[in-house]
Image (cartoon, rainbow, N blue to C red; front, side, top):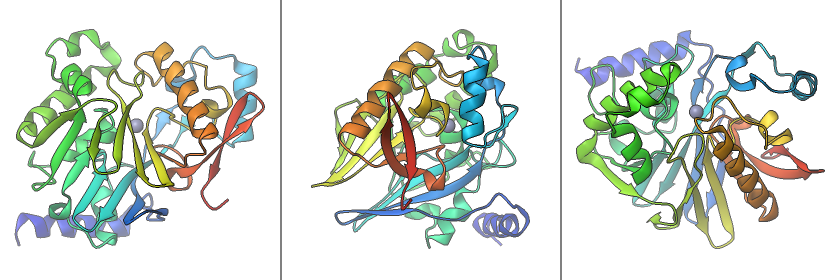
Amino acid sequence: MDRRQVLAGLSGLALGQMPFASFAQTELRIGQRQVTSISDGHLVLPGAMFFDHLPRAELNRILSDHGVSFEELRPPCNLTLMQEPDRVVLFDAGSGAGFMPSAGSMLASLETQGLAPEDITHVIITHAHPDHLWGILDDFDDLVFPNAEVMIGEQEWAYWTDPATVDTIGEARASFAVGAARRLDAIRDQVSLFNGGDEILPGVMAHGTPGHTPGHMSFEIRDGSDVVMVGGDAIGNHHVAFARPEWPSGTDQDQDLGAKTRVRLLDQLATERLPLMGFHLPGGGLGRVERLGDAYRFVEWGA
Ligand SMILES: [Zn+2]
């Protein structure tokens, strides 16, 4: 048995044993491209991480409208897979094995699409938080996608590879900084950098959406009038972020800038009727943004 078979065996085991491994996919065609949402499981997080200091009565009303508990959130993790004749592109790399027991099912999900890690030609990173980046290395600290070019925003790269970041990011996120720096160093030879406004692959435009992290990026995949926005964590949930986009989110590193970005992006998505693929949104993450008075709501694809 080589290591690949061992890993395949383990993921087969995981499939049988882990109730979180859900493979309900959502698909969209953009011209010749097939865009599919694939699951990396979900996170389990205390609500206080998101909601500290928000007005409690209105917050409770929003959460109960959506059947969400204040105490504990279980946001899904949706990677975006884009397949075209000469490329297989993954947006974000998932959590890998070490971050959280309920997450890290990306390789098993890829397998259900008939894909092996070697088939991935490009990995495009929205931002370098653990649930988006750590899956780039395996348990042995080897590259999971040996044939892939990894693309990440220049500012995001600069922030997480800066040795000062671990000391300036704050105690709660110091492990994020250490984990990101180690992984980015390991993939250094595979990386190419880009900026907001760049067409990074044919039909894939990068849009700077900072605040959640300093160099957070979203990606517009377009062919004529077929379009979808891969939003990463710029719009981080389907409840408070839509009902009160201007409220600060505890998960954004720069909460003021995160709120400004969210307000601007929601307005654009609603006005231009752009479908959104959100990393932590329900229904595989794919849906439409509808105006609701001076707020918004997320409408799952097909609903
Ligand atoms: Zn995330």
